[in-house]
Image 1 (cartoon, rainbow, N blue to C red):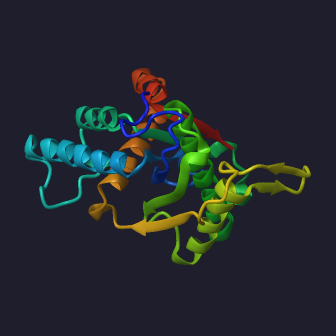
Image 2 (tube, rainbow, N blue to C red):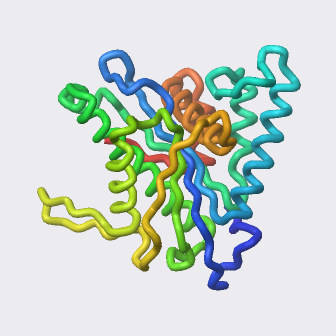
Length: 252
């Protein structure tokens, strides 16, 4: 992946980082095997604006070419044909825009995680922060952007992704992972933060996906990752496409 057009490696340009995330699948191991968080990382405001324009253009073309899509309704990945999903997924990643996914094998999780809403939300927050971190680290590496040249990070998620009372905890855990570092007290180990220099507290925003195009782009990425993993045996090409275009981590 090439570096963003607005960025020259080593130039000292300071940029904002934007991360969009959505989920695909049901978090319920007793009826489902796979759950996914997926999304996009945008390196700088110019990359974000370009991605919005590009994704909106793709959506308009898909809607206008099919009588099955209501032009007044939100276009969800789950409502697209395979051909439409493929086109959307493969058109997202461009210089300055990187896709990522965290694939959760639910059958490998302890049953106790599903015993209460609180435990389920704790794991979902963990999975989301791991997905976001891996997407950011790989996006910076591929683009040749130094961590010191990032001056702020905003994470944007669909407003249905977590409960209202759990939003503070999610913001704190993402901020700790990226900006302050994490302790594993069981193993007496410290995991350093992504950004060793001081940046403002990471902001987590909750938005209506019908009003934010890049949340819908995150939905496309998450949905493709979910389908690629679920249908890996019958449609291996989908997983190969995922591997070639997105950073993938597997949990637990």
